[in-house]
Image (tube, rainbow, N blue to C red; front, side, top):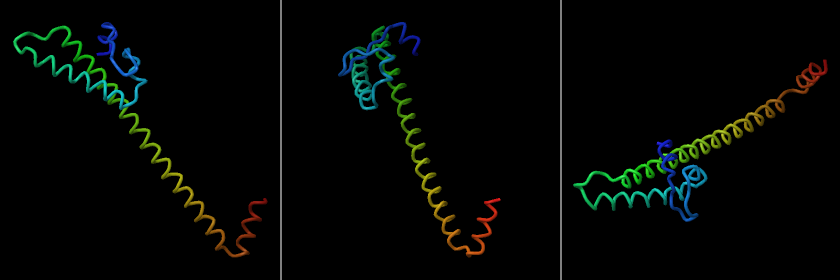
Length: 125
């Protein structure tokens, strides 16, 4: 798909002007969604024109453009979800470590003076 896109030197219309296939990776999800919607409308419009004729090169090109944009959109969406999941895990891990530290502190505070002195003496050796 990307080989065809590069050979055809596809250009995508956006609010930032014409974009290359590589430029799509710099777009955010909303921008990609707008481009995909526009291409989808063009495909629908082209398919309404004539059902008897075979697909034109332009129709094939439109579908390829749509597929490329959708692919990039889905990859970026999956990457965003993975980043969010990773951040949530990190927050939960940090919270667990904080609670564990508090419990360990509480255990130390509940130890007798003799036990604390013994541990301190063991650490000094």
